[in-house]
Amino acid sequence: MIASKRRYHITTFGCQMNKADSERMAGILEDMGFEWSEDPNNANVILYNTCTIRDNAEQKVYSYLGRQAKRKHEQPDLTLIVAGCVAQQEGETLLRRVPELDLVMGPQHANRLKDLLESVLEGNQVVATEPVHIMEDITQPRRDSKVTAWVNVIYGCNERCTYCVVPNVRGVEQSRTPEAIRAEMAELGRQGYKEVTLLGQNIDAYGRDLPGVTPEGRHLHTFTDLLYYVHNVPGIERLRFATSHPRYFTERLIRACAELPKVCEHFHVPFQSGDNEVLKAMARGYTHEKYRRIIDTIRRYMPDASISADAIVGFPGETEEQFENTLKLVEDIGFDMLNTAAYSPRPGTPAALWTNQLSEEVKSDRLQRLNHLVGIKAAERSQRYFGRIEEVLVEDQNPKDKTQVMGRTGGNRLTFFTGDIKELKGHLVKVKITEVRAFSLTGEPIEVRQAITV
Image (cartoon, rainbow, N blue to C red; front, side, top):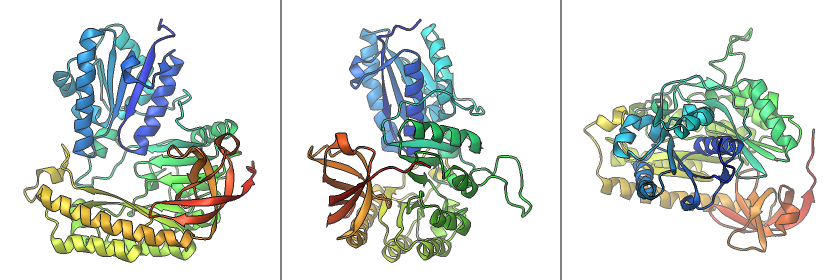
């Protein structure tokens, strides 16, 4: 029996999928009788949910582990867990590097944390990285927010981008059933959540592993069909989704987003490079021109839609001219937000073995130049908000100014305005925008709209 006073702490690195996994694992730990500790040094169970997309995130995990491994020599009942993508990538190698570890578990095993931890508490050192079918998890996640929530719709990825380690560490695509997704959303609506972000490593692939074909020859279940199916869940006011892949992004999906009022006018569609030869080397499966057509189609249906993306600079063999094609794409499209990164070789990926790697100096220079342009274009895009009235879903207090609350517009712009968080949290407020910045807005509250439950 686990003592009720035992405490846990989870540190999460990386993407939204990892954050969603951490919430599920926190829910399992609390069902087992553990209590959350803000301070890892007061916790009996410490879990690092790791990311291997970038080398610096991976090295940070080892730094954190080193400190806790020393602590374990003084506190033998401390349980150390590494979950997520580094765990899947390294497996038993992690135990050799950090023998103080008790449990190493890949992302596909997040729902099995209870069984794995019970084995550890019986005195075993456990490695769980074998491929499994992901079972539905009936545990309630411990949500970090009381207003917005993540809901996984598809796990894994079948793409083989030459720079990306995700298929190696998160496994093959596994779609949840529409019924399971809707049931989770319905429970969130009953609990008072107002916004749901549907998550998938490649969300446009949703349903292609589920049975059934339509008379027209389409998969019976597609992500577009899922949006129609879950759109009217009572209590849920807003729907977002991420991450899209340009190879599979369709006009049918864009049309559905335009038709469904709860779907926010925000699209996150990574392009990674603006150069066709680099895209081909990355094995992305689309061209610069196809990507431009996707954005043009979005803006034809929703002229004011917010567009965000991901981009990598310094990919092996990238020339200055090819990098400038990326700059040109950013200049031409004008993204509201762009997540940028210098290429980082990852274990087990084809590109990591290529001999045409670029120097860190070249990668750093290109990243700085791209980020400078991103800031300019985002500031230009923000100008359209000045003087407008935007509906903002209030999520929390502004940590830097306790007189203000903060939330996001439908287009995903972070917005601050004066208000009482106790009165406004979870409410949709009409705000007149009085100040614009590259990535955030400030305004004055005009009207609080009562939530509509359908």
